[in-house]
Amino acid sequence: MATEEKTGSSPAEDAPGSAPKSRWSFTFPSAYTILFAILIIVTALTWIIPAGVFERDAEGQPIPGTYHSVPRNAQRFIPDAILAPVDGMYGLQNPTTGHISVDNEGVLYGSINIALFVLVIGGFLGITMKTGAIDAGIGAAVKRLGTRGNLLIPILMIIFMAGGTTYGMAEETLAFYAVIITALIALGYDALTGVAVVMLGAGIGTLASTINPFATGIASGIAGVPLGEGIVLRIAILILCGAAGIWWVMRYASRVKKDPTSSYVADKREANEEHFLRRSEQKEVVELTNQRKWVLGLFGLAFLIMVYSVIPWSDLGVTFLPTLGWWFPQLTALFLVFAIIIGLVGRMNEGTLTETFINGARDLLGVALIVAVARGISVIMNNGLITDTILNWISQVVAHLSSVAFINAVFLLYVPLAFVIPSSSGLATVTMPIMAPLAAFAGVPESLVVTAYQSASGLINLFTPTFAVVAGGLAIGRVPINTWWKFVFPLVGILTVIVMVMLTIGVLIK
Image: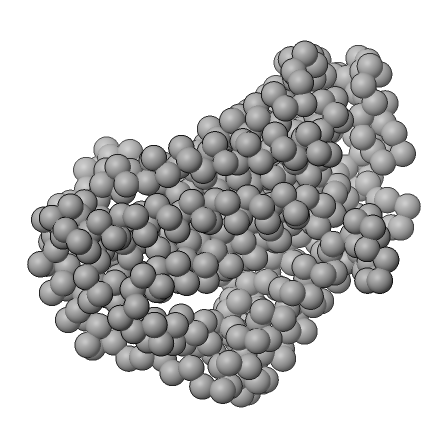
């Protein structure tokens, strides 16, 4: 999913005829390495930062003005730092009793529920992709629109935005670059247009994650707010940023079609036409059968049920719809059931269905592990009694900021953090335990902090070369990274302004 790392080389690596890499060349560390390094640093900080705690209200939120010092409880590298990810998976360990924390209903304060949900989502997506329904659906859209390229661009971008905003569609898009680029080149556009349709479509959808379980879901769970809280603002961001993205791509595409020499990749036009059009003749088309239409319908229905089940209708004043209040356990069961139904509709036998589900879950095993490692950092900070100290320091800084200045400062702070921690789930797990409680000091809803986090993370992943999808998509489209930056940076500025304006509105109407 979005911003999660997977094993294997990127399409740009090990290309035939490429120059050998220098043994001293710098490679940006993976999310695992970064998080483990942070874990070690935080462990050391428990020996330096003074220990202290806030008094908490009934909902577990810090009460401003109640911070006080307590005896230091410095953590050791062995065994505390080593055990922290495990403790984080099961629950936050109580530093006094050594027991795993449990709420009044016996639910563990750990990330095991998140990790299991991620694995089941992986199996659900794996089975859906195995049926060929998503490939066939996008292929049918391209074929049906034919030569109407002016409609093809917005429709395809909306499809990819839907994938991004619902389940953080990212690595899955790599399968579509070649076919989309080929179709747009045949219609008189260029390879950059094709890359932009896919990358910006899914990327902007992820930026405005309305119900993305890997960004909004994890962050909301850690912040202690329902997934549906703040969804109206996120939908508005999706519509505005989506409209800006479509306008930006169509503006460029129209210019290229009128004057091919204005293309940012005009020097590669003949080579790209030969490369993509020739390969398209050899590619087998996946047919959109009635069976695959049913699969697409079930796929969409699963997410519609998810949306309905997490929205607090009663809090919104809607009385004719029951509030289900579902969260990770119920949603995990939901996608498990739909995975089985889609497998049966796809006429998979028991062995194929099971194997495909396990392979899909395996693809997202790295995400589950990242959540565990990242949560281990929270365990060390909590057990070392420095979380509230850091909260107190930051609260003193933001105490003089207005609510509007605070939420925009949070968004801008998350921009560099998203670059340093390229995993969206890892970033949420590391930072939300600190950032969400700060909202109480500034008088800002926690859901706005979640929105600020996911928007900044999505914004960075539209252009950072450390994101595998950017590197892979540009390699498939044969677009140099500096050319992509020239194209996308003005749009990034526009999206930044839109997000900050919407966050400001969110504060003013809270």
